Length: 85
Image (cartoon, rainbow, N blue to C red):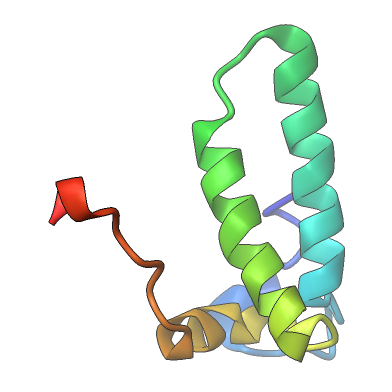
């Protein structure tokens, strides 16, 4: 999945790869299904999926993937359970 938007991530040139955050979430879902089917660990895919889903749920599904890091910096961190503080 990551090889698709690399030019946009590296250079910020979204014209070459107009890849939206919602598209990334869909692709991450495919990665999660493949990991599940193979018995592989999917902890990273789950974490990336959760962060990307939060951006989509926040109304940023049509933002370019190159904007995702900026969107995540603006997001409120998830609340930590009392026993982890």
